[in-house]
Image 1: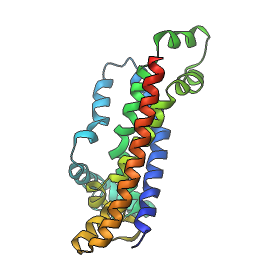
Image 2: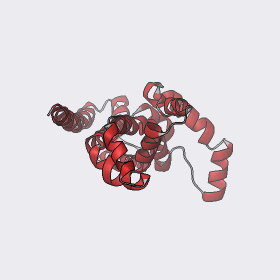
Image 3: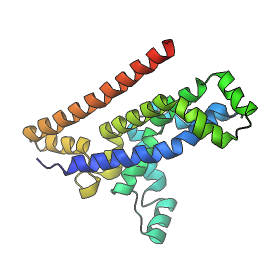
Length: 223
C-alpha cells in the first residue's frame, strides 16, 4: 500500500486548518460584533458550503478559476499557476469548502462572551485589538480548538470537491479519499480496506477529542 496519499491528506488538512485559523478569527470577530445590518447576508454566503453539494462548489470553482476562465488564464500566463489538477487548486478549494466549519464554533464563542466582560474592556480603555487577543480569544479558546478539530477532520474526509478539482491519480493532488475511490474502481479491495481503516481510526480520534472538549466546556459552563 502506498502511504503517499496520507501524506498529501495531512499536508492538505494542516495547511487548510492553519490558513483558516489565521483568517477565521478576524472574520468571526467581525461577524459577531459588527453592527452592520447586512452582515446576515455575508454570514449566509460564507455558510453556503455546509449545505451546497461539493459537486456544485467544484463546478463553480472550475467555471471561475479553471484554465478556460479569465482569472485562470491570467494566473497561468502571469504567474504560471494552475488551479485545476494541482495541489494549489485543492488547497484553495478546501479553504472555501471548510470555512464554515472553522467559523461557526468561533462565531458562537464570540457571541457567548458575557456582556459585562465586553463592557469591562471598554471601561479599562482597552483597544479592540488588545481586547481581542488578550481577553476574548483566551475566553473562547475551547471554541477555537473545536473549529480547528472540525476543520481538520472535515478536510480529511473531503472527496467530491477534491475529485473534481484535483482529478484522479495526479501525483501530489491525490488524497486518501480519492485513493480509496481509485482502488475501489481497480478492485484492489485489500488496499481499500487498509486506506478506509486508517481514515476510520483517524476520524474517530478527532471526533472523540471534539466530544471530550465539548463535555469539558459544558461542565465548566455549569460550574
